[in-house]
Image (cartoon, rainbow, N blue to C red; front, side):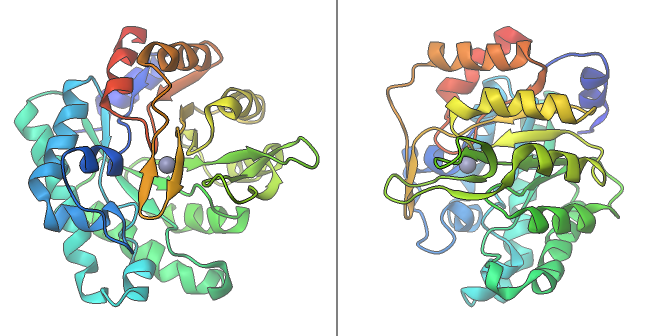
Length: 304
Ligand SMILES: [Zn+2]
């Protein structure tokens, strides 16, 4: 495992393919979701299935797979009385990713997912910092090739804090953020919309956010966990306001705790066409977030 072949691809304007969703693929294989940590508990309770999902994405052509650690944040695990398992869950998730790569004998990099899951805003920014630091430290020490700050659904100052916490690591750091249209103004905003019943959460103008983050973050910026419809627009905003690498991995469907409901109407061909347009607009890293399964990731290799 290494990051070098990814760097070479990015430096030479080649496309890098990410994996897709973990939770919904695990459910298809019969794993049970936890009411608090969603698929976060699966690395310990269904390790073989987590490894299988990783293997499926590697077979489907993913250059980068992501650890099943999005929901295993220290702040969230403490909140649910699982403080003593923080290390175990995060380490185990890295080990499963590494093993899947090792067994495949393919060149694949392992991204360690660091998220703000469970970082309730009311706690205040300061209270979140130890959790970000702790997860970054565990994943890095356990040997991931890069850190991906899955800051999606987070307010701008949380994203900024996550970036600051990642500044000390000596491996590459990618940043993913989500965006949504503000229905009142029709502006493209940093924010998200996960459910069908509630209005979107909107934080600040996406352009402003990208400008702000780009002063402290130099790695790839990815538009993630956003609707397909807004992803193309967001890529353009990112491209116009950031000189670094841009990527995208949108979601399809919506969340109904503790399950992500996929949109089965989107065919692999439709998804490929969407992704193709983003690549043409300068997105160099593509994959999928919630609801985007192996069947939608597999056709993307044709774009390489
Ligand atoms: Zn997602």
